[in-house]
Amino acid sequence: MKNLFASIPDALDDELFEELVRGENVRVERIVSRGHRSPASGWYDQPWHEWVLLLEGEAILAFEEGDAVVLEAGDHLAIPAHRKHRVEWTTPERTTLWLAVHYRA
Image (cartoon, rainbow, N blue to C red; front, side, top):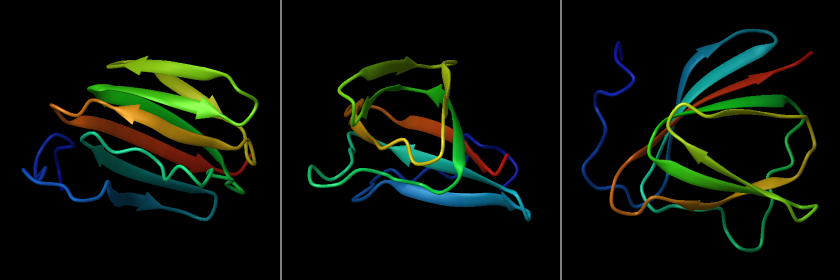
């Protein structure tokens, strides 16, 4: 893949995760959502830090502590390792495109 906006499926039953680059202390992935959200019963509790950039669409990230962040195209956010979070909502009528960088400090 040479273009992050290319090769996006028309139909997505599940959120699409594609690893773009991996190194010893970093992993970069493209995430494609269209009305997807995390399962109601679970939280992401990741051992690595994560930085996300919303390239297209809109999303709401919720955190276990009760706060939530609305993201629009161009917004980015750093999530420390083990900060429990989930995707609460993504735009259902169009693609939400994320770039996620997982890293060890």
